Every structure is written in structure tokens, then in C-alpha cells.
Length: 253
Image (tube, rainbow, N blue to C red; front, side):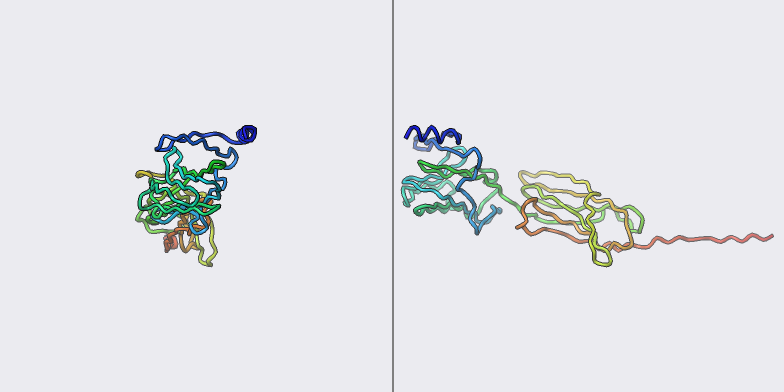
């Protein structure tokens, strides 16, 4: 048994956690894969603020535990029997079957953002780090100045993506009169402000106007999260032609 533990320790890092009963539990976390057998359920692949989020853990053993990353006990099971720990209070739902345990937070909040969740038995431990996503409160687009948009002149526009977590990214599109689109993101500058954990992104685009331009669109998105709908706003440009006036002067001889 000691030889088995020594071999296991060469591939894993040992962590020491202390429960409220002052019993020390030595757990092992994979050095190559933080998630191990702990993963979000198919029904809730992402933790979205105020929505239900469920983690599943493929784990066997007589006693099975859920911990926070700092060692606070969330739930404890003896076989399939719940020992009635409720770290998340009324928002917590847990269950254990023969080979799988689940932990649900029925209305996840920003307090759980960046929280590590650990499931453990006597033989295996896995950890999952939660990112709580907050979708934009609003996306707006406007002209920065009140000047009439005239072709061949430069004009600046602002897209405001309000109250997100983590910070959104943005790209800009021009729709031409023939309905083809052009990406004009390379002409932008971005600034981010924070209010608590929430971010607001101000993206400014400076564009040389062309009479062929019909609409301007700002598209906000989470990088690497294609399952989220993009949040966008469009603005009709109504670009005016630039007129030249010539004065003809005749001279009498």
C-alpha cells in the first residue's frame, strides 16, 4: 500500500485540507489536469449569473466530499447518504449515486466567481475553477460628434458594452450598399472601466466615410465561447455626398 502511495505521489501534488471537525484529509490533485473527473453537466456548460450551475464528479468510494479550494466542507456523503452539510444554504443541491456525485448551485452569484470546487474520496480528487459569466446589461452605439456624416471625411463612433464578467471583446463591421460586409476592427481603440467585478468596455472607431457604406455594427463577444450569442448593435450611417461649388468669373476685354 505504501509503495502504491509513493508511486501516486510522484505524479500528483499533495494538498492538506482541514474540515470543521478538525479532521485532516490529504487529497491529491493532478499536476497535468486540474479538472480530472470533475466537469460541468451537459445542461449547464457555463456558470451564468443568477442561473443554475451543476458540477458532476465521477468518483467512487465509501466516503465522498465536496470542498472549496481553501478547504471548507461543502457536502459529505457516506455511500449515497447525505450528511447534511449546506455551504451554499438553500441554493445548494447535492446527490451521490454509486459512481457519480453532483453539486448544483441553483442561482450562482458573482461571489462564486474564481472559486475552486474540489470533489474527493479516499483514492481520488479533482478540482474545477468556476468562472461566473455576466452577459452585457446593454450594448449601445453612437456618433461621438453631432456633425453631419459626409463622404471622405473622418468621423468617430463609440460602442459601449456595459457590465460584463469577464471582460468582453469587440469587433466592428461595415455593411455596404450591396450588403457585403467589411471588418474595420483595426481602426479602433478600447478602454475598460471597472465597477466591482463588472467591466464596461468603451470601443471607439474612427472611420473615413464612403458613400458606399450603409450601416455600422458593433459586435460584443466572449473569446473562446462560441456557445454564447453575440450581442450587437447597428447604426444607419446616412452618409451625404460632398458637393463642390465652382464660381465662374468672366473678364471683359
